[in-house]
Length: 234
Image (cartoon, rainbow, N blue to C red; front, side):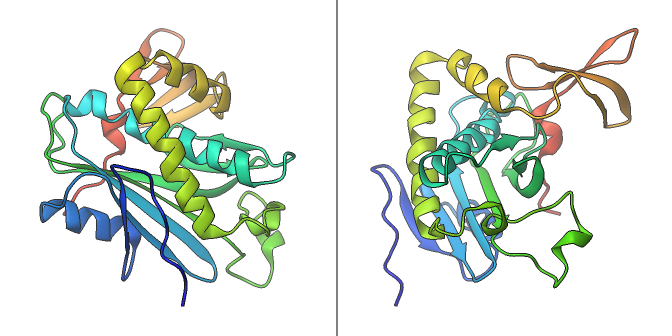
């Protein structure tokens, strides 16, 4: 029998019977306390999701998406070999040694940017091993174990993600967004490159104070807010 995972104060764990993100959203909608870490580990995949109870409007609370991404990078930085490089896509994608390796998702009780939602869930899933017999067929996608992380215990990764994310939540609450911005920018993939997003095409300049994507098309700088990444319950 697998030992129960251990989480820091203010957080508590629950094994999801299916998709960890979906389970966290269901529990949040049912009124569970903030701090729930829903998790599911299988032979080929690790998933975890954290339930928040925001005290600020959703537009600001969505900073928890890049924050949790930074927490995951910090966790892998502590557990993986030093040569393993982890970067973050603006839209929640996770990159290991340059290739796509899972992603983050977000859902809230209310998608209105100017309202404080009852709950917000941020979760990630990462593949541990290739799905097919020919990993070379998808060179732009990889798996955690294929990138030199076979010694990383998935349960340890979930625990470390929770600890590092809580550390960043505390910093965000006490120091504001500046330290998080600095850390995230050092991990962000694609800044300065051409992107296409929500019908816009141009240069990815960076992000605004709420981590909205800034796209310059030659004439105008457009803003795509992080709330555009929210999944809906429908």
